[in-house]
Length: 385
Image (cartoon, rainbow, N blue to C red):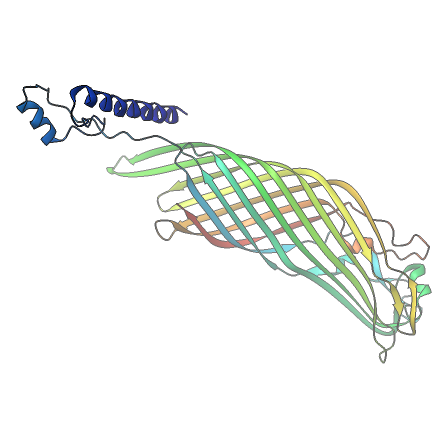
């Protein structure tokens, strides 16, 4: 602010000097004198006036004024994420031994039998800082193609649980049942931050010429976020090896909107830097689930349960952490390698919506207390200029 006021004052004085020079030229009846504050009068003009009997004191050139203003720097971070998520579903049995199986009505596997493999994602953030280190950032991060599945094969010996399994022909004497679970996560953040900075220099007592310069930056973050989790889960039942399989499919969408706070630190010494952040967000969530119609390949063109859906609201939570080592590879570019953690709650996880009852309201409820935990590595680039 002080620099901005100084710049405005200089512009006002500069304009006043030009007006004064024009008025003086009218009185003297000569060409306007160059009285700009950043240059002395031209030598030939001084010579003319000395020859005419006028006397001038030698002008001392003033330094060129610099109009002060905020100096902004930019930062862009791009990381490829390799994250693995847990399966924190409600552990409901979804495949049983059927009446002809070795242990009738015993669980073969539950919703947690679908184990996720490591999935790829990305993180892209861009921000700007003023001369005090304060600024803003806009960013996105997400993970795509998270998928887990499980399959059981026992000719004539597998069953779907509950009254639904009893109502659908072939679902008590299935040849094979496959379960699948896919998930995608997208997060957008808009943050403001205030920065504290420290710089230190240490010397080696045995070699005073050897000095190590260290800088530390701490950003205090506040902002808004949106997080979207879209999932599908299915049970694919093969009742007859010579007939097409039929499925019970559920799709869910969880949208979290809220505010977050956090802290980010960066310690730099020599050619290395270590950076980390921790953010906590709380907000509301809008949840939706839908199920496809349930049919049987043994009785074509008949729906044992029509497609149904439900929606509700809930409270959602988002927390993310990261620690990253940074190594410059040029004047502006650096390599990044780090480790990441994230946790979301207040979600409608797709397998939790399986409803094996057989009533007029079956499939019209929604379970919205699910959560996701992710952990894994990241590798990327950053540019600061």
